[in-house]
Length: 255
Image: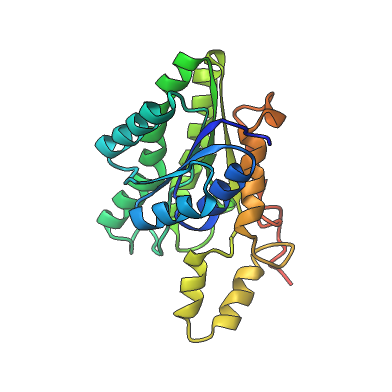
């Protein structure tokens, strides 16, 4: 029970990595706040995992909604021990082809969302004497992929933000780390496959991104989240834990 009775917020927890993380945390004794822009998905996940979990609909790019979420958690449990900043998304486009509005939305959710959730959670952690924050970045922060400029830029910024936050708040007992997943077999990609003319071929192409020649599973990333959220990583801060099946280690795509 790595997180017994700890209060943990997981954003983007209605599906994929966030959902798997919320379930694993609850299995390890945590009181979980399942946060997602899809309120129905958040409530469904909370109902499924039990252990007094609550589902909250929140757009992490909106300060008022984030502040309200934190207030609900503090009112219910009086503390926040762990914040998992996982909410995020991507879309195709390079700097020429992506619409400015799409660029702004990706930055607002992926990057500003971490800023806002941390901004309102850290004061709670300071008052109670510490806590742990884990951000979701990506292997693309160090190994770019084509035609995903805004997504790649946002993830590079998240890695830098993780280090800056870790330095600023270490003496307050707050550890800040990040997980950098590879391509994960999540509902997001399953939808992409279903819309393809050749789903099997497209899946093979995604598998080939990794040296292990497969996509990762949400549960595999959740295990990394648990490690960084728990006392097992108590001497780690400012770290980025890459869990990408070898997507970022070299020229494995050259056959």
